[in-house]
Amino acid sequence: PYGYMVKPMATASLQTTIEIAMYKHHMERQLEESEAWLRATLDSAADAIAVTDAQGAIRTLNPAAETLLNSRPATISEFIPGDPVALAILKDGPVAIAIRLGERELEGCATPVKSAQTAIGAVVTLRDVSARRREQLRIRQMEKAETAARLAGGVANDYANLIAIIRNQSEQLLRQFSDYSPVRPALEE
Image 1 (spheres, rainbow, N blue to C red):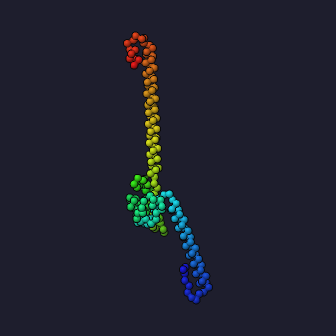
Image 2: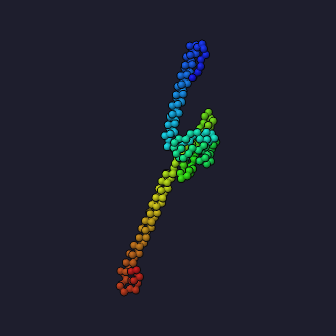
């Protein structure tokens, strides 16, 4: 029921009650659609998203968050040290998060949610950056190996140049001295 009417009914009263009922029905439909859109958005997000109340108690987790956490903790502080929800509410703005959860490295942020200028909770987003970090480490190691190879090539080239100079000088000395010179065996070595 959307309202009530007192008997005997007046036409104006009936008209008003019907308009109010239709308006309430329309608003409930809009609210249901809005919630469906938000739920679909949360469920399709690749990042882990947790919605909390102002004390950090988890109200909603999307499927990515449930998979990442392997369970459903009661509060954010059970797996994120430092209570980022309270910090975000105090700061009145987003707070960066960087944590290690088992073998995974996670980055994200906690952002306060306000209603009528009052903080009512926070949205915590987390992304597994382990693969990206491993790739960055691999690229750095490849760059170091490439630098070492260039250095070794440069040293080898310099060494080869020095050897070539020594050979040329030795050959010139051999040509200058005769076959019977006592320094010939040392020059040949």
